[in-house]
Image (cartoon, rainbow, N blue to C red; front, top):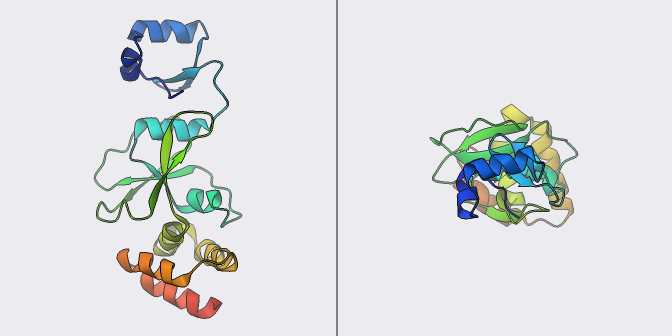
Length: 185
């Protein structure tokens, strides 16, 4: 089941006050401010649910995406979520790090991933896009993370041509990736 909010509760034939009464009666469990799940719902990642509910266009990126694709051993302190630059960053209760990405390249490498235990989906960047962003933002997340992710991706049979095609479309990414590929291959 998708998360219920005061707005979506009305679509499910439940008034706002009925939503709050159900939460007080423990038939609904509060995920975050204004977001509820049925108490008997399958366990799910509440941070992802909150991110997908607050920003349906949000996309898991950087270290969180690399970790999802098993390209890093780093454990992100917060869920890294990209939103289009200029969008309002929502107030959240969860450990979510919001990142603003250029609107022109926002959809590049974006895929939809189901959130386990719910009917909801959230965007996630492909391994190639995640590596490209790691190199592009290496000053913020660390060069070693980007290099190690690239090394693991190549070890698994990743095609450098696919990575270069992605990096060519993202500003400030192609040169450092080409340098790293030259050293690693």
